[in-house]
Image (cartoon, rainbow, N blue to C red; front, side):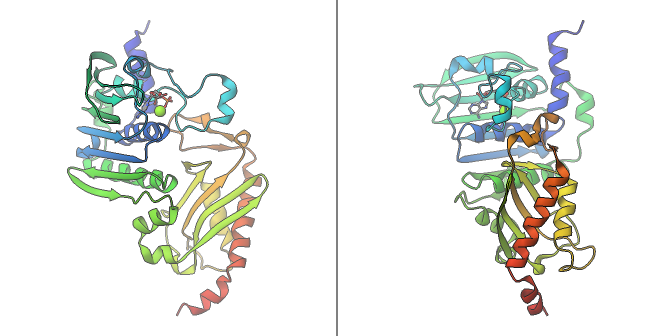
Length: 334
Ligand code: ADP
Ligand code: MG
């Protein structure tokens, strides 16, 4: 028989595979908590320390032990809710998984409570909890990631690489949550600071530069049941890679090679071979057409009826390009 500690460690292995998994889960929790200011601090690529601070609703003193139990979530109560998930989290696995493989300190104050609390977990066990003064929101520090799972520890990349992965993820989250001001500090240096103005284009201008932002075409397309928003690049912003093709479905950052392919195809006739358009694309689909329950990391998403969705998507982009007179714009390039 496996004991509980081992079961939790195994479960943690599916959700938490490297520092970025911790950052993703903690930041998503902060967003779900209604924060509009989220600061992430990492040291040694997150291996030594990851801190996420938010100004969200906080967690009540008595709720802390429960929040760190597996399958304990405040966001989902029945199986019917799965179809109408609006929060980013819903499995109730993140905090328990993180605390199973690291040392965790959480300082928080629930909006309706007078004082805050400071709680320590180590290897999944609550070590200490006490009341303390705290302003607002939640701060979680995760140290010594994988200290008790040496195999995982060994599998992490060099600090710089882990740091890049974290930064990349935060950029994507920032694009899809323009109302939130995100800051990322790596080894004491601020490497990302988004404006939090509520406008996607402001985040994009900060990340890609004003020149790129000036060459984007706004997407605004509906062909039931699909809606498209966001931006695609004009012909001045063509790339020889696909790194700047970013897709969100129902607000969630996803990877999908068929959508990327469809985006390229939409430019056929406009662009040269082996060129890829820039795209920051928000697709809305009814929840019943998606299976987001496919993997805990949740970047892979299964689109039911994918071929149809890709077709509608391509049509939407082509129509947008046609309406923007790309040909004329092309004529003005050299
Ligand atoms: P899930 O997000 O799937 O519900 P988690 O393990 O990530 O599960 O979190 C457990 C619970 O802890 C959440 O449902 C939420 O009630 C609470 N929680 C976690 N992080 C925060 C936070 N930063 N602010 C407020 N509440 C939080
Ligand atoms: Mg969560």
